[in-house]
Length: 43
Image (tube, rainbow, N blue to C red):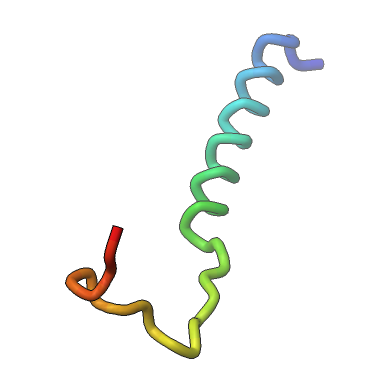
């Protein structure tokens, strides 16, 4: 059986890889109307 530290490290690495994949493949909705240009926005 594998040492607990090794398993913990492998799970941590897997979590990091999953987070990277999630960030790169996250669904980006397509908006029907594009946002107005920056010069038309008033803040």
